[in-house]
Image 1 (cartoon, rainbow, N blue to C red):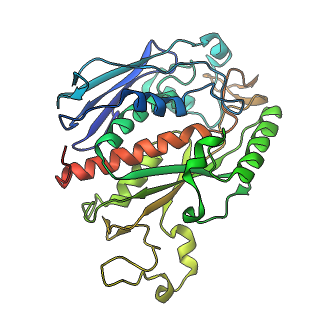
Image 2: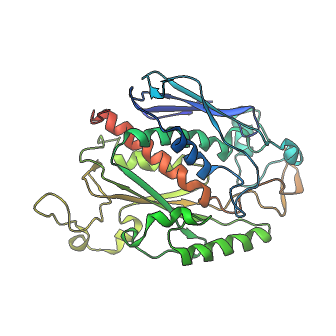
Image 3: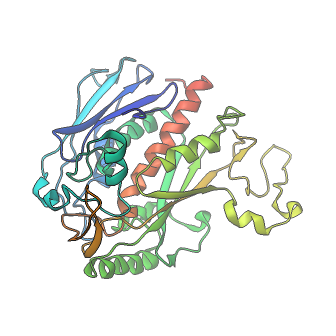
Length: 354
């Protein structure tokens, strides 16, 4: 299997399966001399880990990260950083009923056809559990991106949409509720809706918005490595993501150019920011903001019809521990992938001073 490495200079290679011994990764290209805050890294993992509230999967994993290389006396050495997160609460028997059949809209069928074999226990390598390794790398990237902030939050669950500009929100409230929506009234509605969907044995999708502030001018490498193109790739590599838009996005098609153009101030900033902080594929110093759409989780705890490995139609039912809505736990994943992209481009620009 190829495609397990992300990045150019700041690279992350991940390994492991949902029900294997461990998941983990190797970070290559991290600058030396960075004093790491291990508590902050673990806190990022805690935001993503399962079992943290009543509206996520009840798999109980501590998601404690063990570092094995690249760090000495609390500082990065510049050599590859190897780490592992050991799985402790697998219940592989929950997946015995799909050993010979395929779950609709999962990776089961295509993995089997491509590789001639699949790990049916929780999806194996295709499981979103792999994203914990990304969170570790993203947490380290954040620690040397001094002054740059990443604020992701849930802005929509199903039809419930937070219709507020990000400048109107208090991001300190994002972690105050299990949905991770910085608007308390909307967060309560979203939470109750997710609980209702869960009782039905069903799932629902949602949208995560993200704002990156204090990005310097000049990140991005046209023509094929535009900054927004790499952000799009990063977000679309996350499990269950079906869409990415930045700046004015699809709404911008409703505007005329005279209204959509971001007029300059004398200092080079712009009066509006429909460009989303990126022009010509290069950061312009304004806030970068984007949205990421997540589909409903494919595993529904209901009876359904599917096919088995011999092409026969069979009836089965979803079992196991699954998220009724993935977006609350995906917030730190979006931030992590954004941090990996910015870290990579900062190194390309040689603008990091440790």
